[in-house]
Image 1: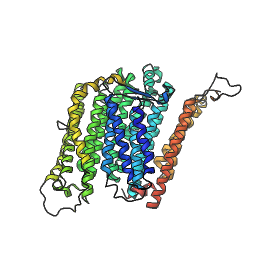
Image 2: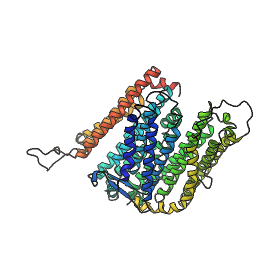
Image 3: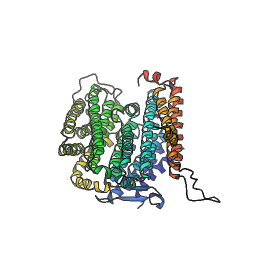
Image 4: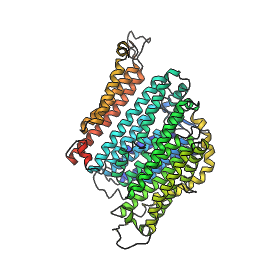
Length: 493
Length: 120
């Protein structure tokens, strides 16, 4: 089956084709990117059609079996994430239409869509590759593409933010590379499955080296995921970018590295960590508390913000903290917790970002007070924002509820009631700032309204679809949970 | 650590020294170009570390030539990883230096503390 490699090659191919197709008429780049993203989504969902709890889909590049070649290996959690990435990219490309076409700088459109396709190829490759060094390369691909996207406006603040983002990312790459080097030094292989087997039988004298490698790998992923206190680069870059780049950055580029934590803890260290010992307890403590602090920090920051885009970015980053927390709670429930948290983060945080962009297009100012009665002029966007808010808060019938329920259940089952308390407390904070904005959107006008120009008519549609998908994920979760729980054995196999 | 151990692991010591120098340059220096050079030094330290790991005493390259003996060979995988890292680094630094040029054209300075004073 060639579907895994096609999922990576297709967006790469369209990344090359976009500037070529856009030579005569730059607007054609949009159609090329849309075609590429739809084909990739079809491939991703076809992979899902072949999957089950015990399925591991593998593909050896060039027919070379590891360790001679690189293997692509996808389990159930990986398939869910690939489907999420591919679907998200289709929605983001649709979302970018018209608002990006207004920016008439030459080369802007071909750069935008080329880099978006590269981000898609990099994130999908990051999720499904089974070779640690290959994962590093894909991480570099989507990171560089994201850096390039943040510079598209060519404005001073955006360039400065992009440089800072580049510095943080380069340090993250160095840390990841050093971790790979240490792992290679004790195992002699880069194939994740073989590393896992060798770590399980590792000489006790070399366990500290493996522990340092684990720390470096997780540090790198924490920087890429913009968890507190590694957030300044990504956060500032997101705020200075265009609406589409902000949505792409906070919904894909920042969230996908958190999935890498599942790969590292499950696929690489799974066998070494399943024996209860101090290594897992230490790693768990660090990961869970980092996630919890990040979750609380960004939620409180969102309350203090006055502009809608800043609130949306802080909310998205708090969702990343939730995913990190969910990864550090229980090794056996890691596929369930991380997958649901990831989908909730995309549905909730992504929806808020997409709809914030709609309001940003229509109003010159973005302060919450200026959005009074905005819902009457843009009902679709307001409904999408409300539904996205419900997902962020974790109201029943949404993906957010599924994620938080799973996390709280794991916390209470493992006796870590303090994390459950933090999650509930943060949900209350999220309820405050989300419902405050929702109230402003549907409140009666008070006169002296802000200048308004209606956004393109289908711009709110991606946000609305994402918020509806949130409920669909809740509905599917009751059948998906047992399969995800069972898939942990395939992750460590 | 004894001097004899240090002499045996001189490559690794040099790699660590380069890594610390690179990180110090990135964190401490205010000029953007110098920060980029700090990143270059950091990447070079990684490559030195990798190459040192692949060394096998008096091992030879895995190239079949007249008189080739397969008894002692250098590990080729770290060298191959170095090549890939070099290619990635070329892209990174080309982008970084291009960004520095654009920032200079836009802001008229390359000093980090001056750029971040008017907080964006």
